[in-house]
Image 1 (cartoon, one colour):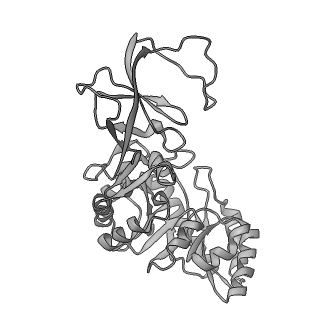
Image 2: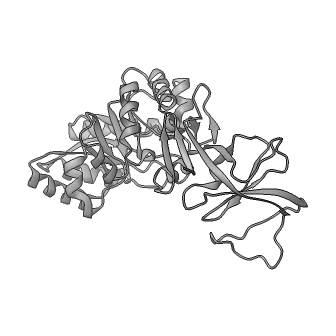
Image 3: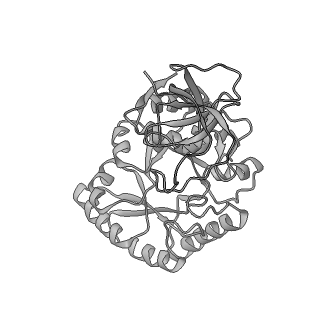
Length: 352
């Protein structure tokens, strides 16, 4: 059945092993697995082939599915008040930045007779989640008095919202902050974590400062791309997720709309270049299930024009192949297209 995603577990495993080869011996590696949408039939062979021992996810529902896997489980989205009981039951380490949530987490941990490990988020410039230095010290001062909370480390996110690059300077800043915390509170931080897939070039160059001891990577492993530059990582595989979709219409049509143009179904005002009459194909998958801007056709003469909720529109005028209705078109998918398709019930998954 189509549309479907063909998943190459061996190639994503090789990407992960390449990351592990590049990392210093004292650097831990946590694979961010949210893109898998809890699919054990992908994650189990991946773990077997790589020896990865720590996984991270933004969704408790996915971590519940992994409860029997012998790996350390991280929750990397700040926990909601409504899910704290599940955090205690299914999460080994969770990110936090709000003292009110940590207090509630401490009380929930008491009920279960557990000690919850937390990693406190520091705002390093990307203006996503995280505390200022002053607030961070205030939170730690209270956390070390709690009976069922352990401050496991500190972390930051870069390149996610603000697009801020990883640099020696900003990673040195959080490394030095960690040392100051250890001196001030006489505690040992197990994790100082900043680098994600956008830091792969620094990992290759060996320029990540000593003392940054945790990698958290997803896109480099699953797609073989550096998200900061939107470029393939040399020596990594990009054919890990392949979308196959079926053509349902082929027509010659004008390259600009006829009539008064306003907003499209996504709330954007489209712009068009008049190229005359072009041969176009519709494939039966759209924005509900993929990010149409994150598709790379295997036929390099094919152009993705865009899409709506149900269709992706292709220009096939310059293709050497004579496409027909019913033919299947293949695409390499970038990360956000994979993320959406793997969580869709309308896209079949084929694991090889």
